[in-house]
Each structure stands twice: as C-alpha cells, then as structure tokens.
Image (cartoon, rainbow, N blue to C red):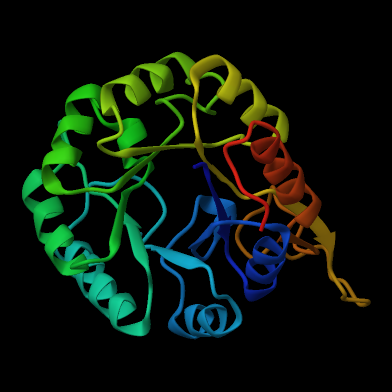
Length: 252
C-alpha cells in the first residue's frame, strides 16, 4: 500500500492534513527554512489532536548536517524526549565533512530511537554516494529514506529515485519528497512505480493583523511578515485521490 506523509509546523496544519487523508505527519518548526526540531508544547498539542502516526523532525538548526558535539548531544536528547512524549518516529541524519554518512553517530541515534520508526532525512540528498549510503542505512536499521533523488525537486531527481527504489527492493522505504503534488504523484507512479510520498501542500494565508508596520522585517526579508503558511487540505485530498485511483490506497 502507498504512504502519504505530510510535513506540518502548526497544530492547525496538522488537523487539516489529518482530516484531508494523510497517513502520517512529520512534525517540525520553521518549515519556511526546511524545518527544525519542534517545540514540546507544539508536539503535545498535535499528539492530543491527531490519532495518525507522528514522526518528529530532529534538526537543531538550519544549514548543513555536519554537527558539533553539542549539537549532536542535542539531537540525541531530543530523540529520547520525543520518544517519551509519544512520537511514533523520528526524522534525522548526520554527515561527515567528506560527504559520507556519519555511521558512528547514526548508530548512536538509532539506539536512542529504540523501536521508533527511523527516517533518514534529506541529509541523504547532499551525501556523496547515495547508493552506498542506502546500503549503510539498511545495515543500521533505518526504516525510511526521505529523498528528492539528490536534486532540487523529485521530478528533476526522478532517474536517481528510480534507481534507489530498484536498489531498495522493499528493504527500506524510499519516500519521494520536494515539489510533490497530485500531478507529480501520478507521474511518478506511472514512470518509476514510486509508492511513498512526502509533501507539505502549503499555501499562504493572509495575517489577521489590521495594523501593519511593513517597514520592519523579523529576519527573512524575502518573506512577507503578514503571510502565514498553512497546509492546503484540497492539495492533500487531490493527492489522496490520485493514490486511490491507482488502487494502491484504500478509502479512509
């Protein structure tokens, strides 16, 4: 069966995604910069509101995946904390400076996760050798690799994704992400037989603020401070409809 995972950074988006038919949520903060580790209260509220699987992104900062000792300790502590708080899985990854996966650190993090579902996130997309890294992930007991096929989006990475799916052979889930929508899902099922997809389906909503001082930026000058990102339920429903149309997803 197929899997549709939706990435959300708010309680409101989580509820929209669940209602629209998502199988699983990836919980994060700061989706606009690719996502960072969410807050405890955010996760707790989503856990109370949603009864589908919740995977938590564990990423201490924006940027590369070469972490200091302090950052690595934070990642391990956060994994253990969210496991105790009731997460179903974690999403993380570490690289070495030469572009290889940091196997020693990943082994420690896999042990921290215990029985939780473990996803190697898009650190995979900037590793040196994705095919070797796939085998290393299998050997570590990683359950899922989230990847765009080492490209800006999954359509551009389609040929690499095709090879990864064939190499995985069902031993590990290849979760296609970046630029995913209903039409992309249809194309990727038809052309490379992908079955698992990761999307945010986000849209901009206008702020409820009436008074607006538009001269001040809070850190992202390219982004309008009076726009809020929310999951678009219709985008998720369209994606689910495509999966059902191929007979690889049951009606919920």
